Structure formats: structure tokens, C-alpha cells
Length: 288
Image (cartoon, rainbow, N blue to C red):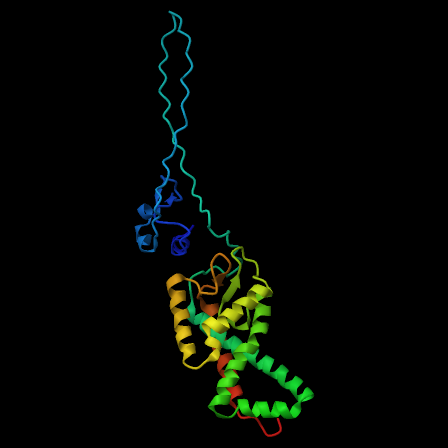
């Protein structure tokens, strides 16, 4: 296990500073704080001491026959007692992570996740709004026109438009995330949300996750309150290495390493986000 993974387990209280570990070279076994003292600030020391290793009872050596008078006595060196090293067992450690391809970075990237969420809101919000507009124009055109005029006029309508968009994107994001582990924004910004074994989290789990993000992370789009929830999620992600709605035992966030290819994809995502924002801000033509 890497040092970052051990630090994550310490923060999650899955292991403690007195957990017995051994380096890869297999020198000897000692508490984790002995080998990696820099991780002591993350450590939680358990109150129960580790049990002392039990030596197996040694049976008396068998009696050797007396040598003949003409045989010289044979002196054999005593066999040293080799104590078995205690196993390095983590009762609540996560399953081995199946990382494939370029998804090998498990460090928190809060700004990547923020811009990926903003791009998903713009893309999925435009798609869902277009679908509802087409259905409304067929079923109830007059009511749809009045409602669209309300959403595009005045600060109250714009706030209602934002809150409605945050709610409409939940099913689409949950479907893509549950089946593939990503969304258009997450793919461009190099993020994937999967189970600890690398499999997709499923549609229902993704739906519940999106609802938590909508309520706990974005505060349903309520002005000013959203700023506090975004800052709280940013701090949580930086301090604990995961978002409040992504517990390491259930879900992990994988990222592409920050290289030339990933930087190019993020620039494409930012350009696409700006273009969508400009297009959505343009006034609609009469009769459209």
C-alpha cells in the first residue's frame, strides 16, 4: 500500500497509529508510527494494546543414541527460534481497486469537480429544458409560453430557472453516472466515480448521490446559501480526501493524471461551458 492510501485509512479510522506494518523489504514488523512518523497527525491510537505474540510450546528434543567409542562426538549448532511475523490484516480495509488505463490518480481535485459539475448543469440542463419545451409546446403551448416568459424575466424568474435546472439534471446525470461512472463534464475534466472494486455504482446509487449533491452540496440553488454549501464541500474534500456523498467504502473518485492531454480536455470543457452560457444568455427571438 502507498503512503497516500495509508493516510486515507488513518483519516477514515480504519487503522491506527499502532497498527503493525512491515516495509516491502520485510525488515521487521513495527507500529505504523515507527516506520512513517510523518503520518502521526492522521493517526488515531486505539485504547486496547496489541496482543503479544504467543510462542508455540517447544517439545523436548528427542534423546540421541550415545556415539560409539570410535566415533568422534558430533556437535550440532542449536537451531534458533524464529518468531513468525504477525500478519498485516485490516478488518475494514477497502477492496483492491481495479484501476484501468489512465484513471490512476486518487488525490482530491476540487476545482476539477466544480467545473465538471458546472458543465454538466449547462449541457444536461439545456437538453432537459429543450425536451420539456417541445413536450409543453405540444400539450399546452400557451401555458408553456407564459412559464418560459416568467423564467427569463426578472431576478425571481432567473432564480427559479436555476433551481428548476438543478432539479431537472438529476435523472440524466444519475443515469450516465450509474451506468458508465461519468458524465460529459466528468469525462472532459478527468473524473470517474466508481465502486472500490472499479465497477459502476448503479443507477439507484447514482440517483441518491445526485439528490445529496443537489441538497447538501448545491443547497437546491438557493442564493447565498449555495456559497456556504460549496465552500463546505470544498473544505471537506481537501481535508478528508473525499466528498461527503462519496464514502470510500462505497464510492471512490478516480482522476486522470494532470498531463498535456488532460489539460487540453479541460480547456475544451471550459470553452464549451462559456459558449453554452453565452448561448443561453442570448434573448430569444419573437415567436421562438
